[in-house]
Image (cartoon, rainbow, N blue to C red; front, top):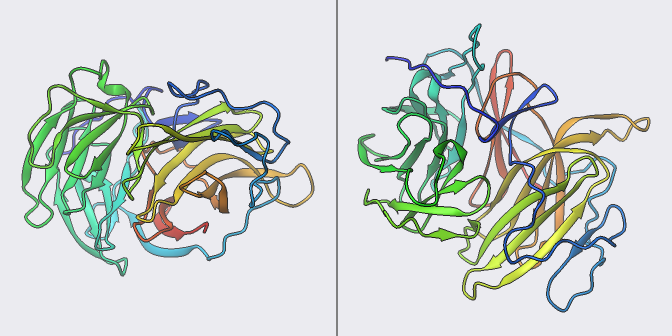
Length: 370
């Protein structure tokens, strides 16, 4: 299969080099979304503050996102282990002398509990069954694919924002191209600033600079030239739009904003103050029950001799009604130089699946914070 050269991805994309670590991240925005009040300034350290109408700020959460290492109620499980290469149970990796090194760009899960890994180096999608074994591959036609997501009907959606500038719709059974939705048009001045692909019902969206989502068409392949927008990522329970931003990364401050879909009104804006410096937001999604999963990369306290820290990802589970912390867990952070688009995905039934890269290959692991 012919392998295409990929363009250099600038900082407007998801993959950003932070402190020498290649991360799939959310940009470090400092302003709240339109219509949301600024987070309060009087919350005590380690607490998160809610700004729900009629609720006093500074109210501590039941689970305090504190300074010490977080503990998960469930162990991290190895879902699959894949080596580097182009074989049936391998994934491609590229380290050119000039240009960005790359590894599998993205991953997603299907309603049947399967995993799909975007192996763009080998020009294919690799499909793994619920048992973690490779079930097959689907060839790709796009030149620089970077993101993959899966609709409820199993349709595979692959984003190429740099060259083809489209979202390909692929039949999950035949592997044939069902349609190709262009991402250029109103509301998307720069396709290179697209930060993700999302499906809500029959609608296909792309995210603009980690903010509003722009509808580009539907699962039948019919494009929407009007490009209407929604104010954030839709939760899988169909109730909320969510958005997250870093407020002060060195001080460990960030917030999550939630908008009720039925009324269009703000449900809450909650600030979280963590006593460790943050690099980036690595995950914001929900499971089928509506629980929100928030992942932040930073220098996590090790719990050993203070002030010992190490790079990692702290995963939070948030209540869908008010954003209170239900649980948390610390996960390893990819520290190899390969550039990727998205390393985490949320499972429908709850928990997350993430890829951890080593010199020998990729390990897919499950984790939970509930």
